[in-house]
Structures are given as C-alpha cells and as structure tokens.
Image 1: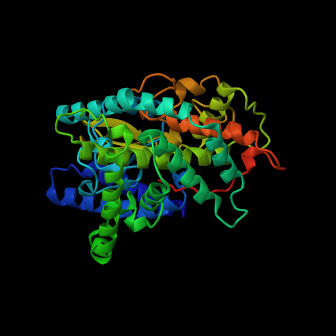
Image 2: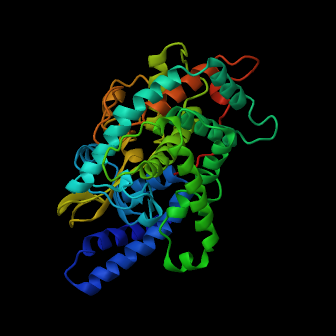
Image 3: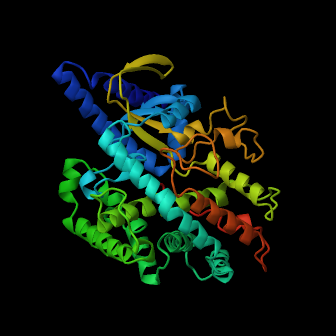
Length: 432
C-alpha cells in the first residue's frame, strides 16, 4: 500500500511541476492527472483527515508532499511564512474545490491580497465585522441570561438519554449560540433552517452543494438538490436582513447592499462560525484527557486547555493559496521548482504537530511555553486576545468563549458520576 501511495504522490508532484510546461500536450496531461488524482484523494481524505495527512507525511518521509492536487506544506516555519505573507487565493475551501457561482459574490475566503481591488474589498469586510459587528456580539454574550446557558449545558449533559444523538444536540447548541450572538435574536425555526443548510443532506448542504464535481457526476445529480439548497439560502438571507444586527447597516463598500452583505455574512457565520465552532468543541471534548487536572474556575487555564486541544487536532486543516512566483521548495525529501500559480495548502493540522517546534507533539500539554507564540489555528501566527490580523478569523473570540463557558459549566454540572469532559466524548465530527 505504501508503494501505491508513494506513486500517487510522486505523480502529483511531477504534474505540479509540469502543469506550466511550454508544451501544450504535457501541460494538459499534467492538469488532467491533477484533476483525477484530486478526486481520488478527496474520497480517501474524507474518511479520516488526520490519518490521511499524517500517514502520507510518514510514507513520503517529508512534511511537504503532493496530494489532493496540490502541494501540502506541513513544515511549521513554511506554514507560518505562508500565513504571514500576502495570499493569492483561489476557489478552494479546506480540502475541496468549490464552484464560485454557488457562493456569494465577494466571498471573502476567495479574495486575494495581491489583487488590489479584491484586497480592498476583503479588508473592508474584515474590518467591518471586527470593528462594527463583533464588539456588540461579545457584549451580547456577556449579558446572556445565565439560566439560558445553564439550559444549554443541561441539554448537552443529558444528551443521548432520550435516544437523541449528542452530536445533533451539540450542532444545534452551536447554531443557537453563534447566531444569537451575531444577529441579536433568533427563533427555533431559524435554528432548524441553519441545521438543515449546514449539517443535513450533503448534496443540498451549503458547502457540499457548492463543491466542484466531475462533469459526469454533475450530470447525474438531480437539479432538485441545487434548488432545495438555494431555497434554504434565500430564506436564511431574508431572516438575516431583518435581524437587529442589520438594522443600522452601513455598507463597508458602496457596492455591497444589505442583502449582499447578509449573504456573505451567512456564508462566514455558517462555515467559520457554526462549523468551525462545532469542530473546536469536538476537539475540546475528545482531545482533553479525562484524567487531566483542570481548574475550571481559572479562565486562563481553561483557555490554555482549549488552545492545546485545538493544536492537537486543528478545527480547520488547510489554508489554500497559489504561488505568486516561481519558487524552489523542499518536497518528498528533495528540492523541487514549482511555477507561478501552483496550488499549495499551508496545512495547519500537520504544522501543529511539527516536532521541531512542539516537543512530544502528540502529548496533551497545555503548559507548553510556546503554545501562545507558535499557535497557528486561527489563520494567524501566535495568539493574542486583541487584534484581528490580516487573515485571522474576526469572530475567533466567540467560539473560544463558548468553549470556555461550556467547559466550566460542565465541570460544575450536578448529579453525574463521570467528569464533564467525558459527557460528549465520542461525538463524530462534520469534517469540513
């Protein structure tokens, strides 16, 4: 099996080098190979992302290797350099290639820093969210009724006793918490709408329905899935437009209407807010050892436990970008030259396990001296409660607060024999 895996990776590395060949036939053949092997790897990756990333790195004897139709970069220093540099983006999210026509215009994750017009739009939207929306959001969650949050904890702690999978409960709690904070007011029908859109029915889900599929597959899949997906998007956007947060909307860019921004906001809130928060909570519950010594009354200690859990299993694995110029880079244990425009992925998941930076990287240790300085889990090098960075998730503090409050409340949950950290253990991830 290792020989087959090596062959797959070597073929993709060859194709990455030849896709910009001056020979049209070689160029076309290289792109064809990358496309076919991308879909093959995508299926393998989806079954177990962490196993895929680590096993291929071990097989190739290098933290930088060709897979998923791109160069996967797992060296911590190179990943940090890539995150800090201006990024030339493309239509990729995590492992998947997306169809831009099925996502909002000016979708911020696709906007490049190196194209002036796109960079201005990205920065305007990013700044608007950080400076105009997020301050009110964080004040809102600070004022949340304690009884409401206690209800969240009770629902999660009691999950499964009535036959309801605990993952369903956790998903809905994430939706309720995130969108209540972002919009100011939501009802149960909106929670179910978002759950359907981001968690249910992969072919009609927000991300799954936007994936770029092979031509034959796109012909076979019924159009009703696209129609169903768009109907749910329209309903969600209409709800956001009427929310308290959007009452005093001031366009970050003149051309972005309230409806247009609401569509962008839905994409960001659903993908990064809900799915990202859900994955972070899974990591907290599954990666923190049940026998750990945690003082739930110490907010700084709780934060360090959460950040270490995120380091061990990254909520988001890949930051995709294209090389802005020809570059010599180490891959498969040798130096290779890749042309301008080559697709790369700064793999946060692998870089967070780099033994050159984190001693005994698979060991859970929230007391690491370099945890705050070398953390890269929020598309930003290092962690600081202040500042949003150029590409750092502007809503990062919201899921961290939710995870912290949830962890502290679960520690104090009465009438249970197991520890709080064991309650949701074993929940399956959504693997975005």
